[in-house]
Length: 102
Image (tube, rainbow, N blue to C red):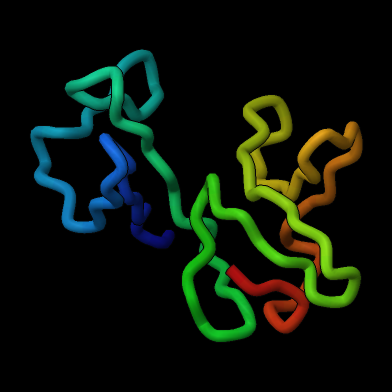
């Protein structure tokens, strides 16, 4: 089992070194001590440059020069790529790291 890695976005700042008291479990889900903190979980994948892909990242799909956003689907329990203003989504695990760049 891998360790869950998160970052928090709050007030225009991305924080990777999260103090333990900032995040807790509530009703089986991660929550934060303040409403304006956005939790972004690491997907376990990296882009073509080796940069870690987190939930909420905007990725350039190199082959099509198209921007997608990495999101989490609670119903399917998986990360997926969603094109802004599009209805379709694609499971993130179906692609290789060379296809995307943050």
